Image (cartoon, rainbow, N blue to C red):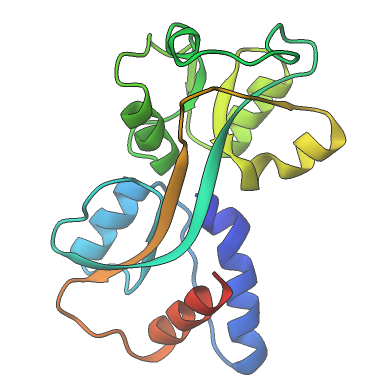
Length: 191
């Protein structure tokens, strides 16, 4: 969803400037569903944020993203760093299982306590954090304006690397052609 909401519109816009007759359909869903759609042949090209190997599909790096721990300005963490142990012991607002953001977080904090709230979109998670429900870990792409405007504060966590590779994915062993290949070329060029 991070790619679909923050990067793909720019890529599609660039592609349509050179190909105004082209119709592009973009389905916004989590990484797990993207992989399923590709394996079923229901999509030519997808973008995922999930870490780890993607079995049976071809991939290409299109960007690097960073996740950040965020809280509202009045939260006790807003003025100090937290440890990995403290973060893992705190119930967070999280995305649903199958999202790349959730997969990255689960991999980084394997022994974390159960979440305070599980939501199906980054926008919903962001809104819950702004409302003071609990801290969250979100893409800096998704919270950049909130951080700049002071609605959210990024909390430093020593020793926690939450960078992730955003990848284009397509059917394994198949060479992309046509609009899918053109969109991939734009995404790679813009990265």
